[in-house]
Amino acid sequence: MAIESRSGRNNKLFMENRRFNPYLPIWFALVLVGGVVLGIFLGMRSGSIMPFKKIGGKVNEVIDYVHSNYVDTLSTKAVEEKAITGMLEKLDPHSVYISADEFHKANDPLLGSFEGIGVQFRLENDTVVVITPVSGGPSEKLGIRAGDRIVIVDGKKIAGIKITNNDVMRKLKGPKGTEVKVKIFRRGVAGLLDFTIERDVIPTYSMDVAYMVEPGVGYIRLNNFSATTHEEVHHALQTLIRSGMKKLILDLRGNGGGYLNAAIEVADEFLPAGTLIVYTQGMHHAREVANATSQGLFEKGELVVMVDEWSASASEIVAGAIQDNDRGTILGRRSFGKGLVQEQLNFKDGSAVRLTVARYYTPTGRCIQKSYKDGAEVYNSDYIHRYMKGELEHPDSIKFADSLKFRTPKGKTVYGGGGIMPDVYIPLEKDSALIYYNLSVNKGLLYQWAFDYTDRNRPQLQRFNDVDKFDRGFFITDAMYQDYIRYAAGKGVKHEGKGLAKSDQHCKVMLKAYIGRNLLDNEGFYPIMNTIDPAFNKAVETIKLTNLKAQIP
Image (cartoon, rainbow, N blue to C red):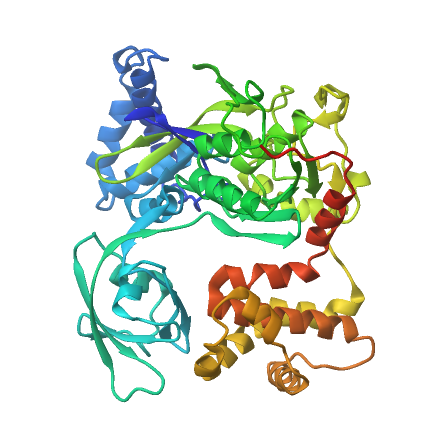
Protein backbone atom coordinates (compact mmCIF):
# COMPACT_ATOMS: atom_id res chain seq x y z
CA MET A 1 0.00 0.00 0.00
CA ALA A 2 1.44 3.28 -1.00
CA ILE A 3 0.98 6.43 0.97
CA GLU A 4 1.12 9.86 -0.57
CA SER A 5 1.71 12.73 1.81
CA ARG A 6 -0.78 15.58 1.39
CA SER A 7 2.20 17.91 1.67
CA GLY A 8 3.85 16.36 -1.37
CA ARG A 9 2.60 13.63 -3.65
CA ASN A 10 6.15 12.55 -4.45
CA ASN A 11 6.63 11.36 -0.88
CA LYS A 12 5.09 7.95 -1.50
CA LEU A 13 5.08 5.15 1.03
CA PHE A 14 4.33 1.51 0.54
CA MET A 15 3.25 0.77 4.02
CA GLU A 16 4.12 -2.06 6.36
CA ASN A 17 1.92 -5.10 6.67
CA ARG A 18 1.14 -4.75 10.34
CA ARG A 19 -1.75 -2.63 11.51
CA PHE A 20 -1.97 -0.70 14.71
CA ASN A 21 -4.43 -2.22 17.17
CA PRO A 22 -7.58 -0.11 16.71
CA TYR A 23 -9.32 1.48 19.65
CA LEU A 24 -12.86 0.18 20.06
CA PRO A 25 -15.62 2.81 19.67
CA ILE A 26 -17.03 4.13 22.93
CA TRP A 27 -20.38 4.98 21.49
CA PHE A 28 -21.58 3.57 18.20
CA ALA A 29 -23.36 6.78 17.32
CA LEU A 30 -20.21 8.83 17.84
CA VAL A 31 -18.26 6.42 15.69
CA LEU A 32 -20.67 6.98 12.85
CA VAL A 33 -20.78 10.72 13.42
CA GLY A 34 -17.00 11.03 13.58
CA GLY A 35 -16.62 8.87 10.52
CA VAL A 36 -19.03 10.93 8.50
CA VAL A 37 -17.35 14.17 9.54
CA LEU A 38 -13.88 12.88 8.68
CA GLY A 39 -15.11 11.42 5.41
CA ILE A 40 -16.65 14.73 4.47
CA PHE A 41 -13.44 16.56 5.37
CA LEU A 42 -11.26 14.24 3.30
CA GLY A 43 -13.75 14.26 0.46
CA MET A 44 -13.86 18.03 0.26
CA ARG A 45 -10.07 18.17 0.13
CA SER A 46 -10.00 15.74 -2.78
CA GLY A 47 -13.03 17.26 -4.49
CA SER A 48 -14.73 13.86 -4.58
CA ILE A 49 -17.91 14.58 -2.59
CA MET A 50 -20.33 17.43 -2.08
CA PRO A 51 -19.70 20.15 0.56
CA PHE A 52 -20.91 19.59 4.08
CA LYS A 53 -23.77 22.03 3.87
CA LYS A 54 -25.51 19.86 1.27
CA ILE A 55 -25.49 16.82 3.56
CA GLY A 56 -27.87 18.29 6.11
CA GLY A 57 -27.70 19.21 9.80
CA LYS A 58 -28.12 15.77 11.38
CA VAL A 59 -24.39 15.32 12.10
CA ASN A 60 -24.08 18.65 13.88
CA GLU A 61 -27.29 18.01 15.79
CA VAL A 62 -26.05 14.68 17.14
CA ILE A 63 -22.66 16.14 18.12
CA ASP A 64 -24.29 19.08 19.92
CA TYR A 65 -26.81 16.76 21.57
CA VAL A 66 -24.14 14.38 22.91
CA HIS A 67 -21.90 17.13 24.26
CA SER A 68 -24.86 18.94 25.83
CA ASN A 69 -26.59 15.96 27.40
CA TYR A 70 -24.21 13.03 27.94
CA VAL A 71 -24.15 11.84 31.55
CA ASP A 72 -20.38 12.17 32.07
CA THR A 73 -17.64 14.60 31.09
CA LEU A 74 -16.33 13.87 27.63
CA SER A 75 -12.77 14.06 26.34
CA THR A 76 -13.23 15.55 22.91
CA LYS A 77 -9.85 14.23 21.74
CA ALA A 78 -10.54 10.67 22.91
CA VAL A 79 -13.98 10.62 21.29
CA GLU A 80 -12.56 12.04 18.08
CA GLU A 81 -9.77 9.45 17.89
CA LYS A 82 -12.11 6.55 18.60
CA ALA A 83 -14.58 7.83 16.04
CA ILE A 84 -11.91 8.13 13.34
CA THR A 85 -10.54 4.69 14.17
CA GLY A 86 -13.98 3.13 14.17
CA MET A 87 -14.79 4.59 10.76
CA LEU A 88 -11.50 3.58 9.14
CA GLU A 89 -11.63 -0.01 10.34
CA LYS A 90 -14.88 -0.45 8.40
CA LEU A 91 -13.13 0.38 5.12
CA ASP A 92 -10.21 -2.05 4.73
CA PRO A 93 -7.48 -3.53 6.94
CA HIS A 94 -4.84 -0.98 5.92
CA SER A 95 -6.70 2.30 6.30
CA VAL A 96 -5.65 3.34 9.80
CA TYR A 97 -5.46 6.21 12.24
CA ILE A 98 -2.07 6.75 13.91
CA SER A 99 -2.08 8.69 17.16
CA ALA A 100 0.59 11.27 17.86
CA ASP A 101 2.10 8.94 20.47
CA GLU A 102 2.49 6.12 17.94
CA PHE A 103 3.49 8.22 14.95
CA HIS A 104 7.27 8.12 15.36
CA LYS A 105 7.26 4.43 16.26
CA ALA A 106 5.40 3.79 13.01
CA ASN A 107 7.49 6.04 10.79
CA ASP A 108 11.06 5.92 12.14
CA PRO A 109 11.83 2.48 10.64
CA LEU A 110 10.84 3.80 7.21
CA LEU A 111 12.67 7.10 7.41
CA GLY A 112 16.07 5.42 7.64
CA SER A 113 17.05 7.35 10.77
CA PHE A 114 15.99 8.60 14.17
CA GLU A 115 17.50 10.93 16.74
CA GLY A 116 19.03 9.48 19.88
CA ILE A 117 22.20 8.14 21.48
CA GLY A 118 22.78 5.27 19.04
CA VAL A 119 22.78 1.93 20.84
CA GLN A 120 21.07 -1.39 20.34
CA PHE A 121 19.97 -2.62 23.75
CA ARG A 122 17.94 -5.27 25.50
CA LEU A 123 16.52 -5.53 28.99
CA GLU A 124 18.37 -8.24 30.89
CA ASN A 125 17.55 -8.92 34.55
CA ASP A 126 15.71 -5.58 34.66
CA THR A 127 18.79 -3.74 33.42
CA VAL A 128 19.48 -1.99 30.11
CA VAL A 129 22.33 -3.88 28.44
CA VAL A 130 24.03 -2.46 25.35
CA ILE A 131 24.07 -5.12 22.63
CA THR A 132 26.12 -2.96 20.32
CA PRO A 133 26.66 0.75 19.77
CA VAL A 134 25.60 1.96 16.33
CA SER A 135 28.65 2.41 14.13
CA GLY A 136 29.55 6.08 13.88
CA GLY A 137 26.94 7.10 16.43
CA PRO A 138 27.52 9.32 19.47
CA SER A 139 27.73 6.42 21.95
CA GLU A 140 30.39 4.59 19.96
CA LYS A 141 32.40 7.79 19.59
CA LEU A 142 32.43 8.22 23.37
CA GLY A 143 33.64 4.67 23.95
CA ILE A 144 30.45 2.99 25.11
CA ARG A 145 30.83 -0.73 24.47
CA ALA A 146 28.76 -3.83 23.93
CA GLY A 147 27.98 -5.38 27.32
CA ASP A 148 27.81 -2.05 29.16
CA ARG A 149 24.87 -1.64 31.57
CA ILE A 150 23.08 1.72 31.62
CA VAL A 151 21.91 2.07 35.20
CA ILE A 152 21.27 5.81 35.67
CA VAL A 153 19.87 8.33 33.16
CA ASP A 154 19.85 12.05 34.00
CA GLY A 155 20.28 11.29 37.67
CA LYS A 156 17.46 8.75 37.89
CA LYS A 157 17.99 5.04 38.42
CA ILE A 158 16.57 2.89 35.63
CA ALA A 159 17.92 -0.50 36.76
CA GLY A 160 15.82 -2.77 38.96
CA ILE A 161 12.64 -0.71 38.62
CA LYS A 162 10.74 -2.87 36.08
CA ILE A 163 11.38 -0.39 33.29
CA THR A 164 9.91 -1.17 29.86
CA ASN A 165 11.47 -0.93 26.42
CA ASN A 166 9.24 2.03 25.59
CA ASP A 167 10.32 3.82 28.78
CA VAL A 168 13.97 3.30 27.85
CA MET A 169 13.37 4.65 24.35
CA ARG A 170 11.66 7.74 25.71
CA LYS A 171 14.62 8.45 27.98
CA LEU A 172 17.36 7.85 25.42
CA LYS A 173 15.83 9.16 22.22
CA GLY A 174 15.49 12.90 21.71
CA PRO A 175 16.17 15.81 19.36
CA LYS A 176 19.60 16.13 17.78
CA GLY A 177 21.91 18.36 19.83
CA THR A 178 20.28 17.67 23.19
CA GLU A 179 22.29 15.94 25.90
CA VAL A 180 21.62 13.02 28.17
CA LYS A 181 23.82 12.02 31.11
CA VAL A 182 24.22 8.33 31.82
CA LYS A 183 26.08 6.23 34.38
CA ILE A 184 27.29 2.87 33.14
CA PHE A 185 28.40 -0.32 34.87
CA ARG A 186 31.16 -2.14 33.00
CA ARG A 187 32.52 -5.54 33.99
CA GLY A 188 36.04 -5.31 35.40
CA VAL A 189 35.79 -1.57 36.13
CA ALA A 190 35.30 -0.29 39.68
CA GLY A 191 32.41 2.08 40.19
CA LEU A 192 30.18 3.59 37.52
CA LEU A 193 31.40 5.34 34.38
CA ASP A 194 29.96 8.78 33.60
CA PHE A 195 29.09 9.79 30.06
CA THR A 196 27.40 12.89 28.69
CA ILE A 197 26.03 11.95 25.29
CA GLU A 198 24.94 14.51 22.74
CA ARG A 199 22.11 13.01 20.73
CA ASP A 200 22.47 12.89 16.97
CA VAL A 201 20.81 11.50 13.88
CA ILE A 202 21.18 7.72 14.05
CA PRO A 203 20.91 5.74 10.82
CA THR A 204 18.71 2.67 10.68
CA TYR A 205 19.30 0.04 8.06
CA SER A 206 16.84 -1.97 6.03
CA MET A 207 19.53 -4.35 4.81
CA ASP A 208 20.36 -6.99 7.39
CA VAL A 209 23.38 -8.35 5.57
CA ALA A 210 25.10 -8.75 2.20
CA TYR A 211 27.85 -11.32 1.64
CA MET A 212 29.31 -13.84 -0.79
CA VAL A 213 27.85 -17.27 -0.06
CA GLU A 214 30.49 -18.95 -2.22
CA PRO A 215 32.47 -17.92 -5.30
CA GLY A 216 30.13 -16.30 -7.78
CA VAL A 217 27.01 -16.36 -5.55
CA GLY A 218 25.97 -13.30 -3.55
CA TYR A 219 23.26 -12.84 -0.93
CA ILE A 220 21.32 -9.78 0.22
CA ARG A 221 18.68 -9.80 2.96
CA LEU A 222 16.26 -6.86 3.41
CA ASN A 223 14.01 -6.38 6.43
CA ASN A 224 11.94 -3.47 5.02
CA PHE A 225 11.89 -0.84 2.28
CA SER A 226 12.87 2.48 3.81
CA ALA A 227 14.14 5.81 2.50
CA THR A 228 17.70 4.44 2.44
CA THR A 229 17.00 0.96 1.05
CA HIS A 230 17.95 1.62 -2.56
CA GLU A 231 21.21 3.30 -1.56
CA GLU A 232 22.04 0.32 0.67
CA VAL A 233 21.21 -2.23 -2.04
CA HIS A 234 23.06 -0.29 -4.74
CA HIS A 235 26.21 -0.11 -2.61
CA ALA A 236 25.91 -3.81 -1.71
CA LEU A 237 25.59 -4.78 -5.39
CA GLN A 238 28.70 -2.77 -6.23
CA THR A 239 30.66 -4.52 -3.49
CA LEU A 240 29.41 -8.00 -4.38
CA ILE A 241 30.08 -7.51 -8.10
CA ARG A 242 33.63 -6.43 -7.29
CA SER A 243 33.92 -9.65 -5.29
CA GLY A 244 33.03 -11.68 -8.36
CA MET A 245 29.28 -12.11 -7.98
CA LYS A 246 27.59 -13.63 -11.03
CA LYS A 247 24.40 -14.83 -9.31
CA LEU A 248 22.31 -13.26 -6.53
CA ILE A 249 19.90 -14.47 -3.86
CA LEU A 250 17.64 -11.62 -2.69
CA ASP A 251 15.97 -12.60 0.60
CA LEU A 252 12.66 -10.80 1.27
CA ARG A 253 11.29 -13.27 3.82
CA GLY A 254 9.57 -11.54 6.70
CA ASN A 255 9.84 -8.18 4.92
CA GLY A 256 6.53 -6.42 5.54
CA GLY A 257 7.07 -3.55 3.13
CA GLY A 258 7.80 0.16 3.32
CA TYR A 259 8.20 2.90 0.73
CA LEU A 260 6.76 2.35 -2.73
CA ASN A 261 9.58 4.29 -4.38
CA ALA A 262 12.15 2.12 -2.62
CA ALA A 263 10.52 -1.01 -4.06
CA ILE A 264 10.55 0.50 -7.55
CA GLU A 265 14.20 1.53 -7.24
CA VAL A 266 15.28 -1.88 -5.97
CA ALA A 267 13.40 -3.67 -8.76
CA ASP A 268 15.04 -1.28 -11.24
CA GLU A 269 18.44 -2.69 -10.30
CA PHE A 270 17.43 -6.03 -11.84
CA LEU A 271 15.33 -5.08 -14.88
CA PRO A 272 16.30 -3.69 -18.31
CA ALA A 273 15.37 -0.14 -19.31
CA GLY A 274 11.72 0.31 -20.24
CA THR A 275 10.49 -2.80 -18.41
CA LEU A 276 7.24 -2.29 -16.53
CA ILE A 277 7.75 -2.65 -12.76
CA VAL A 278 4.33 -1.77 -11.33
CA TYR A 279 1.34 0.48 -11.88
CA THR A 280 -1.23 1.92 -9.47
CA GLN A 281 -4.81 2.98 -10.05
CA GLY A 282 -7.84 3.99 -7.99
CA MET A 283 -11.29 5.48 -8.46
CA HIS A 284 -10.00 8.97 -7.70
CA HIS A 285 -6.35 8.38 -8.62
CA ALA A 286 -5.31 8.15 -12.24
CA ARG A 287 -3.14 5.27 -13.39
CA GLU A 288 0.54 5.81 -12.58
CA VAL A 289 3.17 3.63 -14.22
CA ALA A 290 6.73 2.86 -13.07
CA ASN A 291 9.21 1.54 -15.65
CA ALA A 292 12.81 0.47 -15.20
CA THR A 293 15.64 2.77 -16.21
CA SER A 294 19.05 1.93 -17.66
CA GLN A 295 20.75 2.41 -14.29
CA GLY A 296 20.44 -1.15 -12.92
CA LEU A 297 23.66 -2.85 -11.79
CA PHE A 298 22.41 -6.43 -12.08
CA GLU A 299 20.09 -6.58 -15.06
CA LYS A 300 21.29 -9.90 -16.51
CA GLY A 301 22.82 -11.97 -13.74
CA GLU A 302 20.90 -14.98 -12.46
CA LEU A 303 18.50 -14.09 -9.67
CA VAL A 304 16.50 -15.91 -6.99
CA VAL A 305 14.06 -13.96 -4.80
CA MET A 306 13.00 -15.56 -1.52
CA VAL A 307 9.54 -14.84 -0.06
CA ASP A 308 7.26 -16.24 2.60
CA GLU A 309 3.84 -15.60 4.12
CA TRP A 310 5.16 -12.44 5.84
CA SER A 311 6.58 -10.87 2.68
CA ALA A 312 4.15 -8.07 1.91
CA SER A 313 3.49 -4.88 -0.07
CA ALA A 314 6.82 -3.53 -1.32
CA SER A 315 8.31 -7.02 -1.14
CA GLU A 316 5.51 -8.27 -3.35
CA ILE A 317 6.06 -5.45 -5.84
CA VAL A 318 9.67 -6.54 -6.29
CA ALA A 319 8.83 -10.25 -6.42
CA GLY A 320 5.93 -9.61 -8.80
CA ALA A 321 8.06 -7.51 -11.13
CA ILE A 322 10.76 -10.19 -11.24
CA GLN A 323 8.27 -13.02 -11.77
CA ASP A 324 6.02 -11.31 -14.31
CA ASN A 325 8.99 -10.26 -16.44
CA ASP A 326 10.51 -13.77 -16.37
CA ARG A 327 13.61 -12.17 -14.84
CA GLY A 328 14.30 -14.66 -12.06
CA THR A 329 13.00 -17.44 -9.83
CA ILE A 330 10.68 -16.80 -6.87
CA LEU A 331 11.33 -19.31 -4.09
CA GLY A 332 9.55 -19.93 -0.80
CA ARG A 333 5.87 -19.86 0.18
CA ARG A 334 2.93 -17.74 -0.97
CA SER A 335 3.43 -14.13 0.06
CA PHE A 336 1.08 -12.13 2.27
CA GLY A 337 -1.18 -10.63 -0.41
CA LYS A 338 -1.29 -6.87 0.13
CA GLY A 339 -1.91 -4.79 -2.95
CA LEU A 340 -3.51 -1.63 -1.56
CA VAL A 341 -2.04 1.86 -1.83
CA GLN A 342 -2.36 4.39 1.00
CA GLU A 343 -2.19 8.17 1.16
CA GLN A 344 -1.13 9.85 4.40
CA LEU A 345 -2.86 12.90 5.81
CA ASN A 346 -0.91 14.52 8.66
CA PHE A 347 -2.62 16.51 11.42
CA LYS A 348 -1.17 19.41 13.38
CA ASP A 349 -1.14 17.44 16.65
CA GLY A 350 1.32 14.90 15.19
CA SER A 351 -1.25 12.23 14.38
CA ALA A 352 -2.09 10.99 10.89
CA VAL A 353 -4.56 9.05 8.79
CA ARG A 354 -3.46 6.53 6.19
CA LEU A 355 -6.28 6.02 3.72
CA THR A 356 -6.37 3.43 0.94
CA VAL A 357 -6.66 5.36 -2.32
CA ALA A 358 -5.58 2.87 -5.01
CA ARG A 359 -4.49 -0.66 -5.82
CA TYR A 360 -1.20 -1.68 -7.35
CA TYR A 361 -0.85 -4.12 -10.22
CA THR A 362 2.09 -6.28 -11.25
CA PRO A 363 3.33 -6.11 -14.87
CA THR A 364 0.93 -8.83 -16.11
CA GLY A 365 -1.99 -6.91 -14.62
CA ARG A 366 -2.37 -8.88 -11.40
CA CYS A 367 -3.75 -7.34 -8.23
CA ILE A 368 -2.40 -9.62 -5.55
CA GLN A 369 -4.51 -8.17 -2.70
CA LYS A 370 -6.18 -10.99 -0.76
CA SER A 371 -9.82 -10.72 0.23
CA TYR A 372 -10.80 -8.74 3.31
CA LYS A 373 -14.59 -9.16 2.94
CA ASP A 374 -14.80 -11.16 6.19
CA GLY A 375 -13.31 -8.37 8.28
CA ALA A 376 -9.98 -7.42 9.80
CA GLU A 377 -9.87 -10.22 12.36
CA VAL A 378 -10.09 -12.95 9.72
CA TYR A 379 -7.77 -11.00 7.43
CA ASN A 380 -5.06 -10.62 10.06
CA SER A 381 -5.29 -14.27 11.15
CA ASP A 382 -4.80 -15.55 7.61
CA TYR A 383 -1.56 -17.28 8.63
CA ILE A 384 -3.50 -19.54 10.98
CA HIS A 385 -5.96 -20.44 8.22
CA ARG A 386 -3.11 -21.25 5.85
CA TYR A 387 -1.55 -23.45 8.51
CA MET A 388 -4.80 -25.25 9.29
CA LYS A 389 -5.48 -25.90 5.59
CA GLY A 390 -2.02 -27.41 5.20
CA GLU A 391 -0.83 -24.76 2.76
CA LEU A 392 2.43 -24.17 4.62
CA GLU A 393 3.36 -27.81 4.06
CA HIS A 394 1.68 -28.65 0.73
CA PRO A 395 1.09 -26.18 -2.10
CA ASP A 396 -1.65 -28.41 -3.57
CA SER A 397 -4.11 -26.97 -1.03
CA ILE A 398 -3.87 -23.53 -2.68
CA LYS A 399 -6.69 -22.97 -5.16
CA PHE A 400 -6.91 -20.00 -7.54
CA ALA A 401 -9.87 -19.13 -9.74
CA ASP A 402 -9.35 -19.22 -13.50
CA SER A 403 -10.43 -15.58 -13.62
CA LEU A 404 -7.26 -14.72 -11.67
CA LYS A 405 -4.95 -16.47 -14.14
CA PHE A 406 -2.34 -14.43 -16.03
CA ARG A 407 0.52 -15.27 -18.39
CA THR A 408 4.08 -13.95 -18.38
CA PRO A 409 5.82 -13.10 -21.68
CA LYS A 410 7.37 -16.59 -21.74
CA GLY A 411 4.05 -18.28 -21.08
CA LYS A 412 4.34 -19.06 -17.37
CA THR A 413 1.02 -19.08 -15.50
CA VAL A 414 0.76 -16.71 -12.54
CA TYR A 415 -2.22 -15.80 -10.37
CA GLY A 416 -3.66 -12.73 -8.71
CA GLY A 417 -6.01 -12.39 -5.78
CA GLY A 418 -3.84 -13.58 -2.92
CA GLY A 419 -0.13 -12.90 -2.86
CA ILE A 420 2.75 -14.06 -5.03
CA MET A 421 2.87 -17.82 -5.54
CA PRO A 422 6.53 -18.92 -5.76
CA ASP A 423 7.99 -20.81 -8.70
CA VAL A 424 9.81 -23.13 -6.28
CA TYR A 425 7.77 -24.03 -3.20
CA ILE A 426 9.53 -24.57 0.16
CA PRO A 427 7.34 -26.20 2.84
CA LEU A 428 7.46 -25.15 6.45
CA GLU A 429 10.00 -27.44 8.10
CA LYS A 430 8.42 -30.02 10.40
CA ASP A 431 10.87 -32.64 11.58
CA SER A 432 10.43 -34.78 14.67
CA ALA A 433 14.21 -34.98 14.92
CA LEU A 434 14.24 -31.22 15.65
CA ILE A 435 11.88 -31.15 18.63
CA TYR A 436 14.65 -30.38 21.13
CA TYR A 437 16.04 -27.67 18.87
CA ASN A 438 12.62 -26.12 18.25
CA LEU A 439 11.82 -26.02 21.96
CA SER A 440 15.19 -24.40 22.62
CA VAL A 441 14.53 -21.74 19.98
CA ASN A 442 10.91 -21.08 20.91
CA LYS A 443 11.76 -20.56 24.56
CA GLY A 444 14.67 -18.25 23.71
CA LEU A 445 17.15 -20.50 25.51
CA LEU A 446 19.78 -20.58 22.77
CA TYR A 447 19.76 -16.79 22.55
CA GLN A 448 19.96 -16.35 26.33
CA TRP A 449 22.80 -18.83 26.84
CA ALA A 450 24.78 -17.25 23.99
CA PHE A 451 24.19 -13.79 25.44
CA ASP A 452 25.38 -14.87 28.89
CA TYR A 453 28.40 -16.67 27.45
CA THR A 454 29.41 -13.61 25.41
CA ASP A 455 28.91 -11.34 28.39
CA ARG A 456 31.12 -13.48 30.65
CA ASN A 457 33.86 -14.04 28.09
CA ARG A 458 33.93 -10.79 26.14
CA PRO A 459 37.62 -10.00 26.81
CA GLN A 460 38.74 -13.38 25.39
CA LEU A 461 36.36 -13.06 22.43
CA GLN A 462 37.67 -9.68 21.33
CA ARG A 463 40.29 -11.37 19.14
CA PHE A 464 37.49 -12.42 16.78
CA ASN A 465 37.19 -8.95 15.33
CA ASP A 466 35.98 -9.92 11.86
CA VAL A 467 33.61 -12.50 10.43
CA ASP A 468 36.24 -14.72 8.80
CA LYS A 469 38.29 -14.97 12.00
CA PHE A 470 35.19 -15.82 14.00
CA ASP A 471 33.86 -18.39 11.54
CA ARG A 472 37.20 -20.16 11.16
CA GLY A 473 38.41 -19.86 14.72
CA PHE A 474 35.43 -20.16 17.06
CA PHE A 475 33.60 -23.42 17.80
CA ILE A 476 31.02 -24.67 20.26
CA THR A 477 32.99 -27.28 22.16
CA ASP A 478 31.49 -30.38 23.75
CA ALA A 479 32.01 -28.85 27.18
CA MET A 480 30.18 -25.68 26.13
CA TYR A 481 27.31 -27.68 24.70
CA GLN A 482 27.00 -29.82 27.83
CA ASP A 483 26.78 -26.58 29.79
CA TYR A 484 23.96 -25.48 27.51
CA ILE A 485 22.13 -28.80 27.97
CA ARG A 486 22.28 -28.35 31.76
CA TYR A 487 21.08 -24.75 31.41
CA ALA A 488 18.15 -25.78 29.17
CA ALA A 489 17.19 -28.61 31.52
CA GLY A 490 17.00 -26.11 34.34
CA LYS A 491 14.52 -24.15 32.22
CA GLY A 492 12.34 -27.20 31.58
CA VAL A 493 13.74 -28.39 28.22
CA LYS A 494 15.37 -31.75 28.83
CA HIS A 495 17.80 -33.50 26.51
CA GLU A 496 16.25 -36.97 26.54
CA GLY A 497 15.69 -39.86 24.19
CA LYS A 498 17.25 -41.00 20.95
CA GLY A 499 17.66 -39.31 17.60
CA LEU A 500 18.89 -35.98 18.93
CA ALA A 501 21.89 -35.67 16.62
CA LYS A 502 20.15 -33.30 14.20
CA SER A 503 18.82 -31.15 17.04
CA ASP A 504 22.27 -31.03 18.61
CA GLN A 505 23.86 -29.96 15.34
CA HIS A 506 21.26 -27.20 14.83
CA CYS A 507 21.63 -26.01 18.42
CA LYS A 508 25.40 -25.74 18.10
CA VAL A 509 25.10 -23.75 14.88
CA MET A 510 22.61 -21.35 16.44
CA LEU A 511 24.67 -20.90 19.60
CA LYS A 512 27.62 -19.94 17.44
CA ALA A 513 25.43 -17.66 15.30
CA TYR A 514 24.05 -15.83 18.34
CA ILE A 515 27.52 -15.36 19.81
CA GLY A 516 28.58 -14.08 16.40
CA ARG A 517 25.76 -11.56 16.44
CA ASN A 518 26.71 -10.39 19.94
CA LEU A 519 30.25 -9.76 18.70
CA LEU A 520 29.82 -8.69 15.08
CA ASP A 521 26.12 -7.86 14.67
CA ASN A 522 24.29 -9.38 11.68
CA GLU A 523 27.52 -9.98 9.74
CA GLY A 524 28.42 -12.56 12.36
CA PHE A 525 24.95 -14.10 12.46
CA TYR A 526 23.38 -14.72 9.06
CA PRO A 527 26.31 -16.44 7.29
CA ILE A 528 26.33 -19.01 10.10
CA MET A 529 22.59 -19.33 10.69
CA ASN A 530 21.85 -19.70 6.98
CA THR A 531 23.82 -22.94 6.81
CA ILE A 532 20.96 -24.78 8.57
CA ASP A 533 18.14 -22.91 6.80
CA PRO A 534 16.50 -25.33 4.32
CA ALA A 535 14.99 -22.54 2.21
CA PHE A 536 18.33 -20.77 1.92
CA ASN A 537 20.09 -24.01 0.99
CA LYS A 538 17.42 -24.71 -1.64
CA ALA A 539 17.95 -21.21 -3.03
CA VAL A 540 21.69 -21.87 -3.35
CA GLU A 541 21.00 -25.20 -5.03
CA THR A 542 18.46 -23.63 -7.39
CA ILE A 543 20.65 -20.76 -8.48
CA LYS A 544 23.62 -23.06 -9.07
CA LEU A 545 21.52 -25.28 -11.34
CA THR A 546 20.14 -22.48 -13.53
CA ASN A 547 21.32 -22.52 -17.10
CA LEU A 548 21.38 -18.81 -17.81
CA LYS A 549 24.78 -17.28 -18.30
CA ALA A 550 25.29 -14.17 -16.20
CA GLN A 551 26.49 -11.09 -18.00
CA ILE A 552 27.68 -8.48 -15.57
CA PRO A 553 28.32 -5.04 -17.11
